[in-house]
Length: 253
Image (tube, rainbow, N blue to C red; front, top):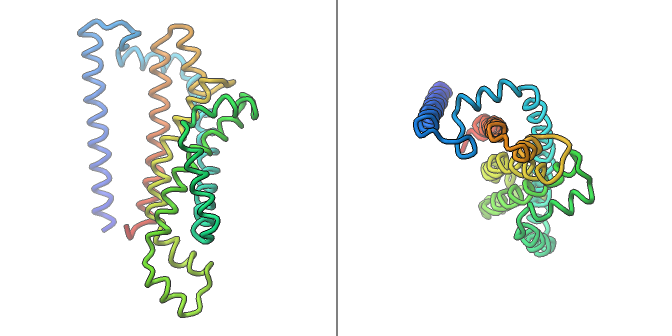
């Protein structure tokens, strides 16, 4: 089973790399063949040259954004899972938590950026808070949906053997909910990087969002695309890491 799974993963990676190479070739030929200006679509070769030339700046910006996204992601996951567990175990609290969380999430997360920047400053803390807010609701919804899908007869059976509510949660409800929890965490990886970059563009001392904003002011569209590609790479690595955890620990899925 593990050999077949490894082979399937290798084929999937190979197909992804082949697709990326094909897209890059079409991009390069289109940009050069139609003589497109850089502000419309710079060539892949010019973007790669810009990335090499500004490797130090991009690496530092990627480290800055990656730390913000990772810290906010971890905090958001803990908050989302913790609040979902409380809501599932306390029906009275659920009737308050769910409408409150829905009301907060009904407004685009970016709309909170000016307030968060005012409260926490333009440093790393404000970006971590924004990422945590964005991630926590997604993980909360997936966790509470997973906790609700447990078979009631299984709960009654384990309770008949004297299991407490905590034991039922730990031994039955959380294992049942784990596939949906991991799915929510996987979806949130990309969202965490996006929110961190957008918040950086509104106010920051560093990061890929700050690099993009400065490059736009300087009309350096090659640098803009370089930062975008680096951000995409971070998102793919993050997404792949959580997918690897999912395949490793949610094997029964």
